[in-house]
Image (cartoon, rainbow, N blue to C red; front, side, top):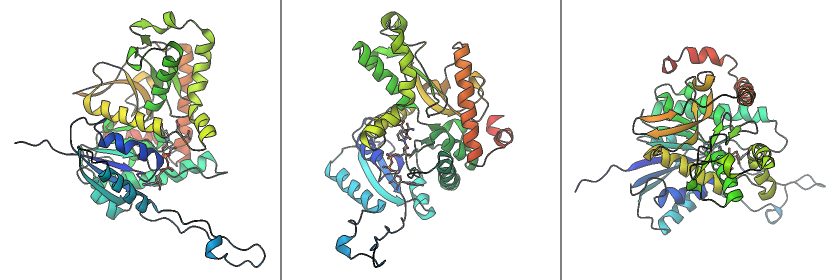
Length: 368
Ligand SMILES: NC(=O)C1=CN([C@@H]2O[C@H](COP(=O)(O)OP(=O)(O)OC[C@H]3O[C@@H](n4cnc5c(N)ncnc54)[C@H](O)[C@@H]3O)[C@@H](O)[C@H]2O)C=CC1
Ligand SMILES: O=C(O)CCC(=O)C(=O)O
């Protein structure tokens, strides 16, 4: 009997909260169907020891029973997740492995990888400026980009989820030049799904009834969600939803949805982010069967976006690859929103210490 090749899926940030929702979806067949998978989990190889509490009066370390309880390390967390995967006896999981994010770990994790899902990122600390976060993550993603260049096969498909997702993907494309440019993507599917969720809430339709929703630009509070070409059961949305206030409120609602979830949960979206990652990867693997989805991709100049910027576009995927759906009219409002997103992404690249990004792209033969 001929057996199909096992798909190797690398998940970084595997000790984190999104991964805890995502891994069961990968393991239960929601992403790769009947194909068997090797799940390679990666998280920080080492973490600094927790800060010890001191006595305010004597300035000596408090005794152990007054110290906060010890927290599991990322490597211990992943061991626990691996135990749960085993205990769930998923029929499609051929192998689970655990790795640190240093070169020793990543060389093994990335070897033979088919999909590399980069959830791990430096989290924002209280009081930290956004530009400090961007700088810290750009340095972390420079390392990951170099590791992809050294250890990953050229067919690997790479998704950045960790924020700032678009700029992190851009950093990877600079450090990893051997992998085709359209094998890099960033997650904007959560924003896309959020729009569909609002349409379902408003009309009572199913997500399968909705077509033509699009997200353009950066995964940030500047993103440009559009329902201008959306249909519900084939009928233009404007003929189904006749409520001007709903359309006016939709854009800021989608732009601020992540922040609103953090305000309520005290943690960022995880279950919905995992669902969006599963949708993104499943569609990348199997194709979209003529449907439009949103995906962040290095621009090849579509819709006038400068080449190289990682931009969310409407795309269709078939056996020949990922294709940006072109030809939608650029209204005045659209042009303004595109300019806002471009300025924000250029600012992020400057904060990541890539102010001369256009020269870097001009020198990259993948954009010739
Ligand atoms: N693009 C999108 O639509 C969304 C993006 N996000 C982003 O996804 C990321 C992950 O979110 P959560 O799982 O909630 O965070 P989390 O804090 O629960 O987990 C992150 C994990 O990544 C690990 N990590 C950090 N740097 C790493 C590195 N260089 N290599 C490997 N592992 C590393 C940490 O140790 C931690 O275990 C965050 O940056 C978050 O802002 C979250 C929701 C939606
Ligand atoms: O908004 C954030 O900073 C993290 C979560 C996120 O990207 C989202 O929920 O869309």
